[in-house]
Picture 1 (cartoon, one colour):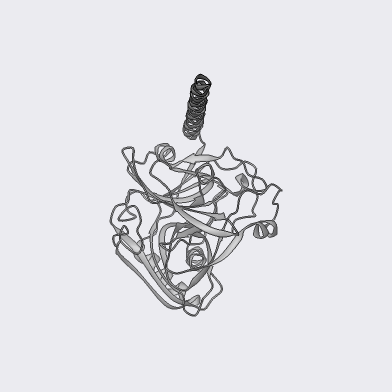
Picture 2 (picture 1 turned 90 degrees about the horizontal axis):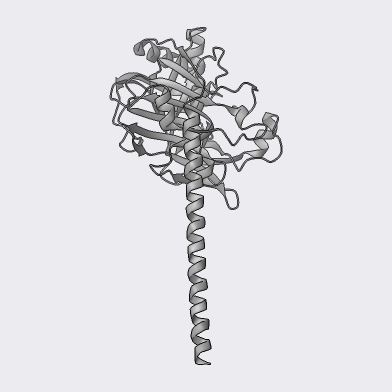
Length: 356
């Protein structure tokens, strides 16, 4: 009877040890599979089609003068100047690099057709590969896109903000995802996660100090959001000369209508009405730090003319639409004029919905 007890105890220990080993091997297999799939994605990124076109690059002083006059239609108080870029790594902006200078380029990757009507999950893009694809190292990347859903576990917004130099990553990107009872959660990505998915509108630069266009606006009196008012003012002045801007702005006071994508729809979304019913909308509070791009025309590249996402230090982040407090809203933005646009992996089959 004593022998039976010892035998049973040994059997229990052996069974437990076997289960532990099985779990460890399963975890190793999953880890290897993830690493392998990430490697496949990386290699595939190096073969993506790239179309590059020069943008019209006006003098910064001229741009400031155009905006100073044009933005008065949309804001009661406007000041636009050309200044030395402040240190954007400091509060309130807390970006990955000090400035926006050094080979400023707009980069648009993928597009809404990879999300709508139904998601194409194979469309994952590694920023380290994209930087190599357009020969930029070091590079400072800021802008708006879809976040890495394999990391988040669900579809999510990406507020890209990272520096890559000689293979070293300074990752300050946030993502925003819908959890629980429709609440939006902000998460900061680790240095080893440098992917986005489906679509992105980004400013690539060397992150150097330099001259920028400072735009201060207070009390909105028109119907256009902050970015649309800048874009339309430039488009009206430069007409068929296509100008691109990228950078950051701070919603200093007030609140903004922003959306966060929920998990991917299992039924086709085929119109803006469908998309708006699917999205989750929030009224988010200042201070919000937004990053993104705008362009005054599309060439023949099927471009998204404006796209900004914002993050915060109070767990709110999403896709910027417009402020909801026009009487009290206050904006402070710093922008640079891009020299070229790189259109990467442009969808062959396209449409125009889902771009607000």
